[in-house]
Length: 489
Image (cartoon, rainbow, N blue to C red):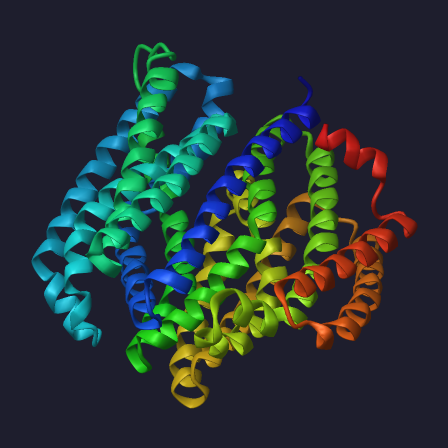
């Protein structure tokens, strides 16, 4: 199987798993928001998850992505070092998780009270277990990425999504409310962690015969490379979660629900871009090691063009239909989320580029540059949230996210350009053509949206926009139907 076929195969596997994960997440989001929890309960659940996501940073410190980078390199150049790399990482993670879980167990009541959410105390207490299972679930996924066996990452991700859906709904229906939904998350991640770590041990750790000795200085390089990744990962999680925490701190759980729901919808829309970025990024490390930067550039430019072709129209369409979409699917209780979703539609394009680019920079050895950019924009995002949320409410959090992420994406693209020498002129012309197609599509959707009065008509409006986009994309030459059929088949 050549490299292009390998990428397509990996993309298909990752996209299928991401589809299972996102569909189960979307169904869980719909069932909880529409039927099982009120906005206060929904907001409390995801506020607690946001706090735990920040705490979980200290249980990993960038080790997962650091070892993935070295697994990608050493499985080709010196396979005997692979068992040592895995053993070092797991041992370090066990130490970190034990320490963080113990501190959380001691101070969970104080944390909840200090952040103004005493009702979240039981969530944070259960969060001790959540940290353990979530950490190893995600570690196994990233490790499989380092081995470039994305099918296994896909399996682990699909199990976590399906498990969360099944058990969260079951526990809520059993009468345990939002806390029951949280325990559903724990069970889903626990199942994924068991399967993922089991495959990693039997299928990879046991398969590689260890070298006679650990390469001198390799463990130190592994830990050192985790430092910029820690900064990047920390900034990334804080960038994604601190706004949720601050909305809860300055406003109320219902506002958290409105903001979280809008962000979850954007996550669902972003699934294909995340799958593509997860798939192609290990290849950049391999190609750089082999001196094949021209191939890396071609892959990145093609991927970026396709991402923009899909997500610029998707973001504009999402902003146009946000009102009827939210109120018809989730109910009038969530009407306050409409302006939030409309602002975050801009974030969809930015995050799609980020999903394609960020992991690629890690494998190109530019984690430090990305870390500096992410750290600076995360600090700016924090400051803007503190300024805007008390002033203009939950929409302020969305504005802060879009503004700071614009800067981060610009820096990422510049760093990729310095590594790969992108054809900026061609990319600019293609982007202009995509924007023109989007403009025609937007006019079409705007004309029919006022007529929408049912879910069927909403689907029709979306279909009209999609058909308009598809026809113009083919006529303009941006999409080759033959290539699309070959990829799908």
